[in-house]
Length: 202
Image (cartoon, rainbow, N blue to C red):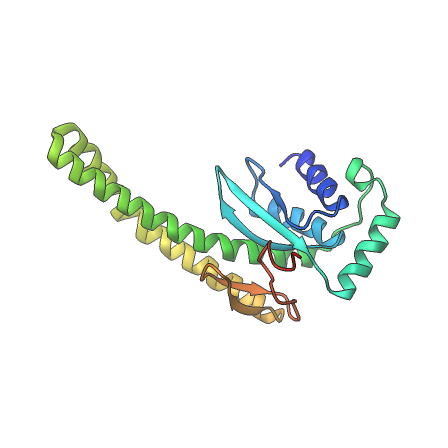
């Protein structure tokens, strides 16, 4: 992930935008977590991640008094952060917790992707049977890959999700269901409307 994504994010936050989205073309979960940790230093909170052409991570202002005070302090101490200047140091434990939250959210997206893939292959198989040999062969190969890959992928996904759950619960994060029906873990004492970029608008 290039630094330009960090600068673009900070410029939007400096302008006071309510909802900020960042979509690095290629980023690891740790890089996403680092981005979210920087956002926290300047008064914004990780609100969720979704699929676009890649992954799109969103942030909303953290209206808690501690977050407001931290943001005011950091903008005063690092006035050129959004122009490529110095930024406050990041705590490794904060990055680890954000990585767990982001990974947990991504695991739900992975499950949805698997279901879509199964549906697509099923449709391709039916199409192949109706149209001829070649599409049927491709559909058969895809089905074989899914038979092997899906159970393995789901098992890895469950393990990763359980590991993140344990870490977040130990840190006091609270499970909640968002407006899309997805289970999320939010920081203790989080204000109502968390994760909804439209919450709090006039």
